[in-house]
Image 1 (cartoon, rainbow, N blue to C red):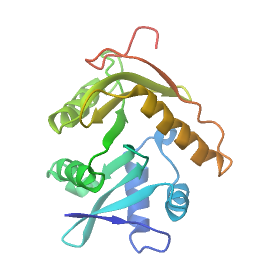
Image 2: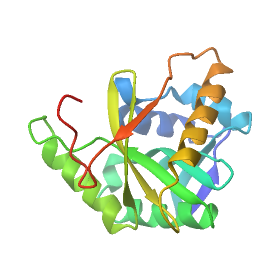
Image 3: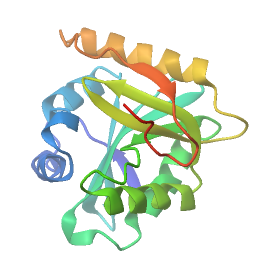
Image 4: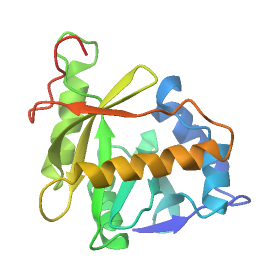
Length: 195
């Protein structure tokens, strides 16, 4: 398996677009053309996940000094539950070796639809070396638990700087709706009351 940078004109863009549409709800999805543009500008790494030359998924990473933010990780539905996610996380750790890797997931909320899927997703990341940060990221009415993988404790200040970098990147394209707020969340990932 390998990760390959995807730039405009890549023949696999259409397939990545289908995976992007299928994997993420409208309110959480970033337009693939935006991702490609940011990648071409050197601000994002849009990486195709390949197994024996075949595209099986993609991940999008915002690289930053010492801390890299995984925006998206999605597999083609036809290859899910075959271990590609775990192997991809290992490739991401190798590619950004020495850095803290952060990502966010929907927090646990037992009364919400999809609670079991959220719990399984969280368990997947915990089994693959990620730890709870104690941070809840909110923006545009959405809430996400922040998980991290790296040496030492979670550096909330460094993460806030990464989010500021993301906000600045988005603003270069006239996207000014991203105003992230960090709050505390329990280490078991349960959404606080009233959140």
